Length: 265
Image (tube, rainbow, N blue to C red; front, side, top):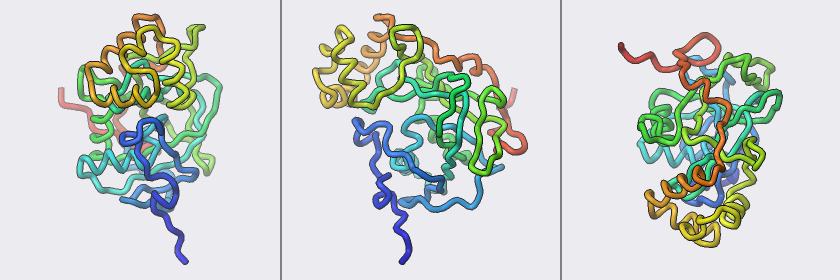
């Protein structure tokens, strides 16, 4: 009998955009290609004609990716490759998302290794993800930057390493842990519970529970902006450590996937 590779059967179908307290959503335990409602086995690990993007939040959730792509009418297969990444950790974005959650955000983590997913995106898929992260907008929450090796090591299952990858860096910074270092993301419900209990003024804006927080945030973009300002006003924000890459651009190269061509001068 053929294995059921549907997202529902694999437990990967729920999108945090629809269920914000599940953020960042379920990540696949193995590499695969997202093809409509299915996650099918990969034929290879590197795609020279695509752009490699590290996913540190809900972009690693197939259900979320399917939701974003379907919303834009993009149906092409999307390879998702697990990798051991050294130099990048996961912190907490210093902004309240209009989707009803406080998202993950990449932080510099020298010498530390964790498993993440590399998305190999074609031009249409890259445009969709860029738009969802606010990259084209001057007031967007994220900007896409290139992280080069050897600053960051991205090792694939066959032992090969990429020459780098893109990642989305938060324009607002990240929340710190009280010592000035980026705090780790404990999961959406514990994070919101902690913030509502300990950030003066946040309950008045978003209610007393994670459920109220998500519901109010989803209904009011202006309220999200006020919550974001509140983090900064209380001195809760620090740099993620990856800002220095924001001025660098990457326009393709052998063995890493090709980035879009540079814009005309």
